[in-house]
Length: 104
Image 1: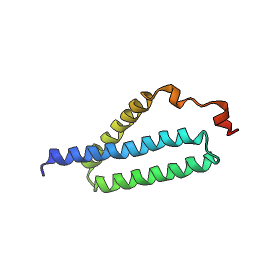
Image 2: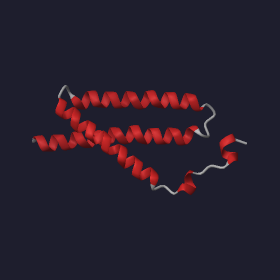
Image 3: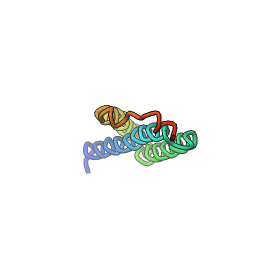
Image 4: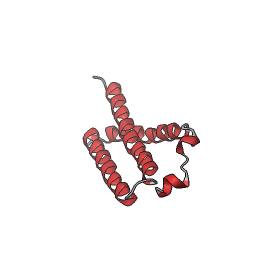
């Protein structure tokens, strides 16, 4: 495989890692509002997301700064993708009533 194809795959892997990280963050924040133990949800989600991300960067980077940089660029690109997708969700779907927030 040539270098451009490899770097494209690395960039796409970075996007996948970023979608898992930032999508997981968005999902965690959304669910923590109605969770019985929001602190536990947030902390466990944080450690899971960080573990997956660090392991992914370690495996993809393979001690090569160019591979690491390509993965990082994909990761940052995924942030904007997740931000765009989550902002396009109608606010009516995201709004919660007091009854839903307090569980009453």
